[in-house]
Length: 356
Image (cartoon, rainbow, N blue to C red):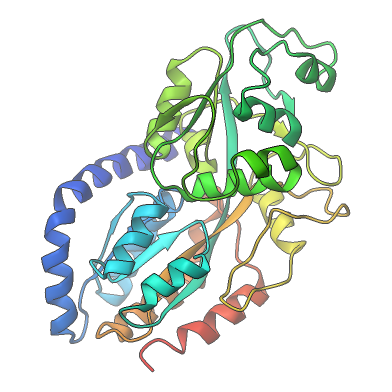
C-alpha cells in the first residue's frame, strides 16, 4: 500500500476517533441496550488500541459486507479500551498490553473475560532532526537514556559511537510520549525495561508511566504530530502511523546485535522466535533470543478482550474468527504481520469458550 493511501486511512481514523469521543457517552446506552436485546446480527461496539485502528477499519467494512454485522470501534487508546470493557460500556475492548492480574480481577467482577491475540505489529521510535541523517542506529541503552533525561543532545557520544561518520547536529533532544493510557507505551517501556535495569527501576512497564522528562501527546496521531512539528523530537508510534506520516525511523539494535528494518518481515521474525503462550493467552516479544537476527525488538500483539457470557456471543465469535483468519489478509499493506499458526490455534480454543 502506498504511503499516500495509508495516510488517507489514518486520517479517516482520526475522524472516527473524534466521532467516537462524541458518541462515547451514548455508547453506554446503545451498548447496554443492544446487549440486553441480543438477537441475530446485533451490532458490536468496541474501543481501545489506536495501533490496531488502521487494520480495524478494514475489518469493519469487509466483515459487514460478508456477515451483515456492523462493528463500531473507537480508537481511544488501550487504557481506555480496558476501562470500557471492565465497566461493560462496550462489547469488546482492544489492547496492545495484556491484562495484568489486577485488571483481570476488576474486569472479572462483572463476569469472566478472555483476552485473545488477534493482530501483530510493532511500535517504532520516530524522530525529526533537521540536518541529521536518516536511518540512525539506536539501541536500548540510548533510548532509555533519552527517556531518563541522561542523553539530551543528538551529538551525544553514545549516539556518535553507534553511527560512525554520521554528521550529528548538537540539537536538543525532545522526548515525546503518550499522555493517555497506551499499548504503545506498554510495548516501548516493556522493551526498555528488558534492556535497561535503570529504566526498569525508575520508570517500569505499563500502559501509562511517569517519564522523568519530555512532553506528552494523546494517541498515535498526537505523538506523530508533535514529532513532525518539533526539530530534535523523538517519540514512539505504531508502524502504520510512522509510515503514513513519513517520519524518520531509526534502526534499533536487537538481542542478536543486528539492526533490522522495522516492518512486516522483522515483526514476523520476532513472533516466530517466541513460541510460549501464557495461561491467559499473553505473549511477550520483549525478550528475544540472541539467535533471532532478523527480529524487530519492539514488536507487539494486540488483544481483543471479551466477556465469556454475552448475549452477543454469536456475533462476537464470528467477528473474532474472521479477524484471525480472513481479516489477516489486510495486515501486510498496513504494517501488520500474519499471526503464527500456534497463536491462531490458541485463539480458536479461546473463542470456543465465549457464550459457554
